[in-house]
Length: 458
Image (tube, rainbow, N blue to C red; front, top):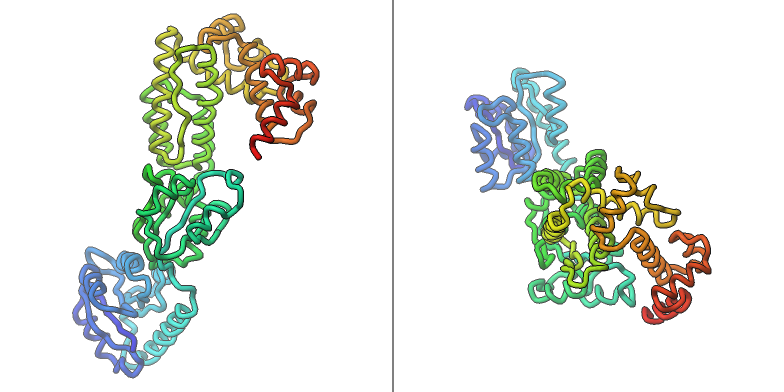
């Protein structure tokens, strides 16, 4: 038997619809009626309903709004629209919201009610059969996200297998039911995993949930995860996060990234507030912020501190969530503003120095000189040289040589490029001169450095 509810603000319409025919002949039983959307929602919270006959024009909450609320809370309920309007726009909107049929109240009578009832029941049964054959809704589950690169592990699934987790891709794993996360949280985090617990969903299949996690789960953890990287979401919370994170505003995101690279937000508190608000509105991919922090740490901060014996070095950034990323960036901003005051440098000069070190890294393979770099950041050559020495504590040539050798060390360990190719990639035209310089600064020749560090990594 099909349970039905009629919702109309006119009592005569409610009673008239039920009395027009013997609905039970068509397997339909009217188990209740409501005069508005509020009563209807209350009824649905107390009884199971298969189909609602809903008036479009009701006070306080019209039929379309009621349908939207019902779809969110009771997705299995179907709708038949009651309307006085025999208009295409009304019908189209009703069908888009999931109505299986519509009835024009002014045209309904005892002569055509049986045909109408048969049509409604036929469509409703088709919908129920389709639902029966449809994939089951997501029943809840726990997922692990690999924070460290896969290359960190000796075997591909060594750690995941400890928790009997099924691989979804190289980063995501579905955990077996029954594990108590509270007992494993510290162990999982130390092994390099974050965990998301999701409640059952009335609206999404397991395939849809996991497909969304693969696309947006990293952002979910980054912007909403706690310091233990253990995130627990109800169905309603998951739907809210999906709405917030699934919208991609690529043009706005690209513009935001471009504007981030002016670095004004690092030195001006008002600019910081605007930048942070825009970041939380757009929620760009975490890799952008992770690379930004690593740039500030490795290319700016460490270069600043090379010649300072008593320098205060901020710890290497741990950028697994936005909260810890924000905290690290604020510390870096405070350090820059403090150094700006100590050296009596203007905001604009400080920004030029940050941009200069980035240009040096980006153009490490070119024959870069102070004249070109000063021009790129908008300063005269002599003033640039003076400010560069004050800011970094060493000369432009010393910094450039160190950056090139650091890049060379990275290539020696992570690639199989020849010494000649590496020399060219880090700005040395003569590979023999590169080898001599490397030996003078590092203490061993490039080939020896590669052999030593490759053996250590085995």
